[in-house]
Length: 118
Image (cartoon, rainbow, N blue to C red; front, top):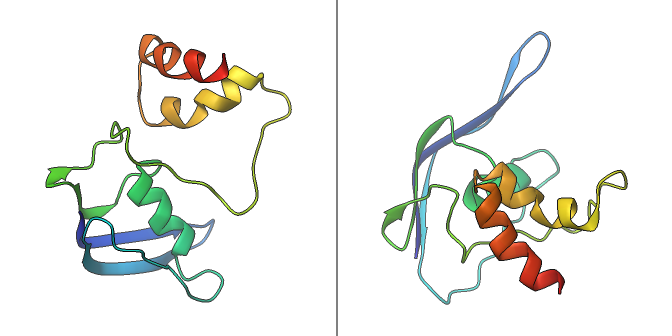
């Protein structure tokens, strides 16, 4: 179960702040397929970054299985339409990037990533 309460997100440009969405609230039960659709720039990717823990909400709360989302949930993943490998990084660094962004320790990252790369 994912529950979103009063979520807000915006971008800060050079001259102004662009509000992407404000006061967004919804819930999704476990096992229910969901599609996020809308025009370019409406906040789909921002919402997915928030739900995956890669971005912190400006306001509002996100709950996963009744607990506040803290970025360390191992059952949440994000796969983008176009892959984004960083060519100047190693395979290990690319594979561990999401965990680093979410605040996992170096030890935790090694414990998770190394077995997968074996």
